[in-house]
Length: 190
Image 1 (cartoon, rainbow, N blue to C red):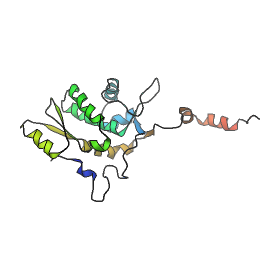
Image 2 (cartoon, rainbow, N blue to C red):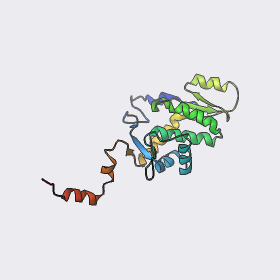
Image 3 (cartoon, rainbow, N blue to C red):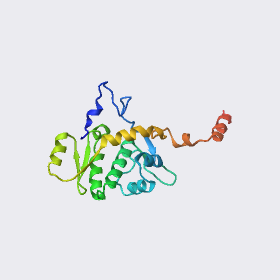
Image 4 (spheres, rainbow, N blue to C red):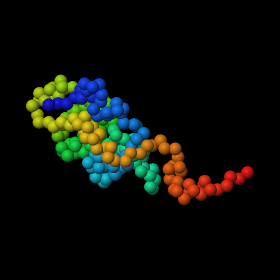
């Protein structure tokens, strides 16, 4: 059975994937280690894919020593799909093409996409008719319902610490307790 986006509109009028009816905040992200655990990949894969521009962080890039990449919900979803395509034996070249199509869509749009591959080519299907047309050729294919990957991620992502990219300044978030006490004790000069 091919899954489409109909699960987004439940009988209660709500959204199963995002119960509060809100899409994930585009300024909330997850650091590399959390992104790896959520997507089921190694840190080495994450680092390589970021350096080769296969899938990089859309919220914050690593800029210099000590800075941390910050991956959005959509980034982690794409990481998970890439992992599944690699596990199925799809070539990196074809995965890059698929990733470009995924990047151009919004999170809600991705829920209606099912990727199929015959091992050499990746096909995007958004309706049952497209799936039937693809299968008429009689060749063996496998499918990845992006909505299924979304459900998996949304079920586990809350277990990991999120970070907002719009925090005031780096100075205020890195100030330690001793510095804060010194600042509040210093007499104001008149």
